[in-house]
Image (cartoon, rainbow, N blue to C red; front, side, top):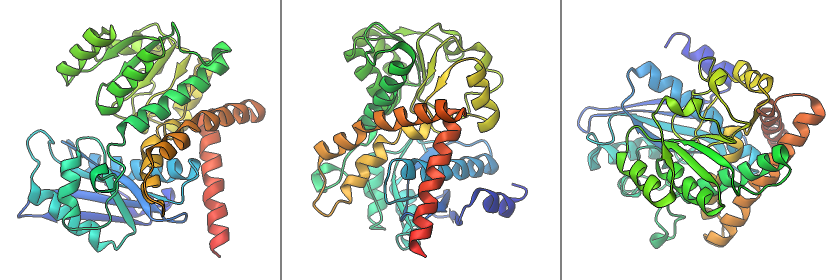
Length: 356
């Protein structure tokens, strides 16, 4: 990647670690964006990136997003992320995760690792054999367990705040919601939405079983991967990869709200955020409403021990965060994603001033 140091300086990254181990065939990158508010917390994801540069761009964007996510959620945590270059369906192995754990341990607590896309609890247990800086472990050993249900619940609360603004009531009864991606979070979100009385249209190009299950059990209509952008609906919920809101897809949207779990949904923040405003589509900034998982993990670090009830109570407050973003957006005349960035930066700066 040309200009790596310039990119790190511009976006405020503190450290980028390239991890390579010939024995385990590990190829990974750890990015620590900002530790002003506390150690950098962020999950590790495993994807068959097409190039090393693609992986680097992803981890830099994701780690920056984690800083803002944790700050906006009011957590005493900074932002970081790790990516493993490989296919989670065939390239996993205990040696690979133990090797990554050794790299995490070498950072001496600056980076707290948790699970993300392509990674499961059993993988985290392998990482834990080499480092103590692991979060999101099973409840059976005192951890907070799978963060996906809390992430999905937070997105639901964010949706409800948006629906209240657009339609005058936060009820999802009878609303039509299009979900893109039925992974752990996307499927759980579909279940929650169904319980609220909404109708579902979903796309899932990889996991045919998940698509069949959501159709048979939740009555969802299944459409193609590309067709989801053209669906007439109340809410479009991106729950897969990032960068899907761009100058090709935004003109196709037929919704009043975009609110989903995917990270980095705006391909180009300022341009695509404004494009949504111009189309009179209310955007729920991704890191503002998908923070339920990290909020849940933060409770794991509570001196009194983990409490699922406390975690759920804190995640429920995402409704209030989203309402604040909407109100400030209207008051100041700026898009919601800019409001979120502004508030997150202000929280980080307050932490920086307090540390001096």
